[in-house]
Length: 436
Image (cartoon, rainbow, N blue to C red; front, top):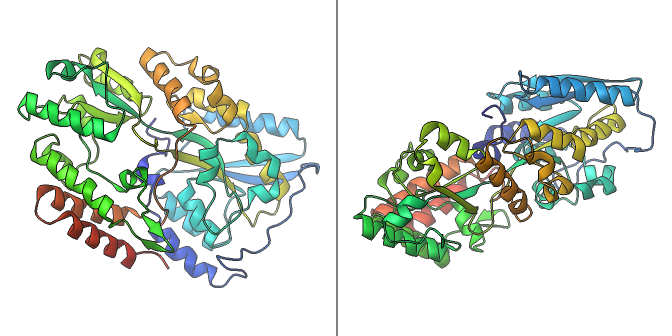
């Protein structure tokens, strides 16, 4: 599923270049960020006719092309006189392509983009308010998915959630048994996680750390710390300092491996599969990876819901505010994301979840085709988890900010600087680089 662009990096930042280009182009437009220009009216009862462009992101391949060809053919058959022109862009360079299309006034009518891109396009008045276009249509989608396309300072909804992702906890039960912990009483809170991590580190002599991630902004959000307010980052609080201090304690007790603090550390699943840590987070497809890369470990893993608020990763469909055929564009975006078509899509994109309430209330509608029993169970658990999942962190938080934050926090955990100094530096850097 590598070609389905729903990874954390696409969804939680990386739009700085897009923001810069669109901010410049917006200067010559009517309206402003606070007062978007009036969008073209949409008549949902009107007869559909004419043509539109529909753009996806790295989905034209052997697995998905037949699905989209049938989808479009069925729509055109239901609505004689309509033509849907399907475009697909490569995974790499998609941000730049959106830049070019937006500044040239050539955005396709229906566009597959994550909420970060939608937010930047909205600031340039380039995406349609779908709540204003058809208020009743919003009700079929998951709350978290709709919230992802709802932005501070704007009353509307600027995308339909299409396919969703989240993570579960995955545990090495053999390590729990070996080092004096009960695999039937896995951690359900952060305090329990920290306590069991220290026990495992002590009993294993530091050979089996439990925790395999450093704290990020999401941990602060989950703990109720206000990280962004009135256009400024504010996460250098006493509560945040205590969290970093706790991780420094865990690191000193060898409950966290040193790899976690390295600049090139990209994730915790690799260490878990290598048997170097006893906990990781991963999607529903994670057990398939374990069986392929560490078959002896596979029977010894257990899954639970994420501790705290589960993260939500969203891909959606937006409609260009400049569409010359808004009736057809909105109708087709709704068609692609209706419950039936979303279910059929995630039957192919196994491990992902539909963006509709109905499908997640009845996960058997899409999990029945999953052959791996652990993956099927995980998808069912995620369908329940998705009801509370939220896309985390302020959209102003870029990849560069995350990198700097990680460097400062790593220094604090190693004991090179204090936690307060690390957070003060990170807050200053983030505020110095907030797109104006």
